[in-house]
Amino acid sequence: MVAAENGALAGAKVGGMADVIRDLPEALVGVDICADVIMPSYGFLASQQAHTQDIGEFEVSFGGRTEKVSLFVMPHPKVDGANIYLLEHGLWQSTPGKIYSQSSADRPFADDATKFVFLCVCVAQALVTARVPMPAVLHLHDWHAGCLAMLRAFVPEFSALKSIACVFSIHNLALQGTRPLSHDSSSLAAWFPELFASLQPEQRQSIVDPRYPHCINPMRMGIVLSDKVHLVSPTYAKEVLSPSDPKAGFFGGEGLEQDLQVKADQGKVLGILNGCTYSETKQAKATTKSLVRIQEDEFKKLLTTIEAALVLWQGAKTQVSAVDMIAFARTQAHWRQASLGRVPDLLLTSVGRLTDQKVLILRHLLPSGLSVLETLLQALQQTQPNALFILLGSGDASIAESFQTLAAKYDNFLFLQGYHEALSECLYQYGDLFVMPSSFEPCGISQMLAMRAGQPCLVHGVGGLKDTVRDGVDGFVFNGNSLTAQGEAFLQRFTEAVVSFKRGDWPAIRAKASEQRFDWHSVAQVYRDQLYNNL
Image 1 (cartoon, rainbow, N blue to C red):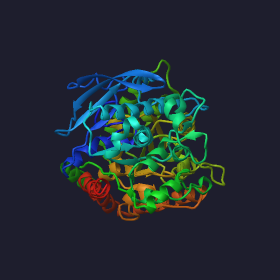
Image 2: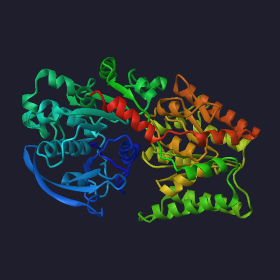
Image 3: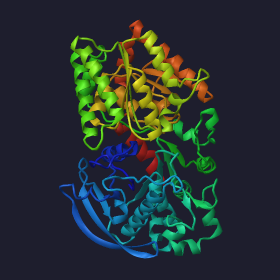
Image 4: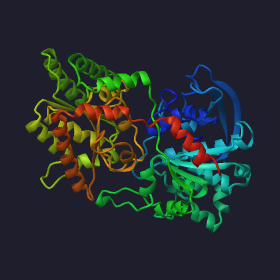
């Protein structure tokens, strides 16, 4: 497996793809498949692992120069017999301690495209020179690894890779890594001048972006030049076959729908839902706990964890953060309520990245002039004055600023800007209703984690959310054929959920949520039978 992230290693997780790369190898062992992973070390991963072995250096031709790359290997921490290979070079250290770089608006993906194209050529070189054992299947994950399919197809030096099957997994089609063909330091001509000069017209046509013919598209390379394409839920695999229509609130193929349709017509597009890990001991506790709401001691634990997260985030700053200060002030008010034995009558939670994918519907302005989120907060003030909505997330600065403004205006909204593992676990465990109104969701892990803890979810009926939440059974689903319709449907379904909450049938819904299983072992069987076999 070739990937940019890996949740099996501390510091190597940013999004949901890291969870898949962490959990899938362990599940595949159960169906007699041993999966190694290769990825960059980013200047810190190899050095912080206790059992890392230095295999040595090898040379790679890149950017008109010969680069020396270090290769390390470590045993997979959870899978006997499986290895994690880590590649090291200065290109992957452009943002110290981080996986991704923040490029300027006029040169999107510039730094990241260069370092992940470099990853692809390094993996190809390591395989054909036997520094890394040649696998039976080459499994590429997202646009970061898409260029490897192109090198396999077009570069004679790497033609040995054609003898093995190649599958391409799409975790998020919205991010494609598009860069210019030429006339830029981060372009195909700059990376591979000889390949650029020798490209045949049909080869060039298969790798350029359909919307921007002067640009290459690594995501498209993976789709067109791999043997099979895998998307991370059955519904998402259907949605991407239709063109996106943002005005209608629909996000589908993002310009690559025709390529995906061609592949689908060949029977080479599969939708396989990601899995989730379960501990039966914890699940038994979650099922029992689902019959009762958050208790006083649990609410105090939640507040203590919030304070710990705020202190941790503030420790990396030189000035007091306004958003953290607001959150701290709100937390102190809730401590005063907790000291009197009071807990929120209704606890809404949300955990996720601050991106348009996740919160576009919440930020959409309704005909009233208020956003969907502000309308929700006002409605809560009137109907559930002791309710509390806690949102944990980081990402887009403009989104964070708008949420900060609302957090200062409404005392029933606690916005926590950042990520904190223990805090997210508390929110999954103690919330009454998990809010996840994504505009699109390839699979989603947050709703699975909330359900695992016995918390029903209110979700948009798209992608993996549609495939995991059953409306009125273990959660609540809304739909709409425009952003306004989606926002209004979200508010309406929320109102109906609150009625259900007050009516007393909530424990049954919570129990159904905690009983749901999206186990990795079943997923691994589908990978073996439908994705890897018959290639």
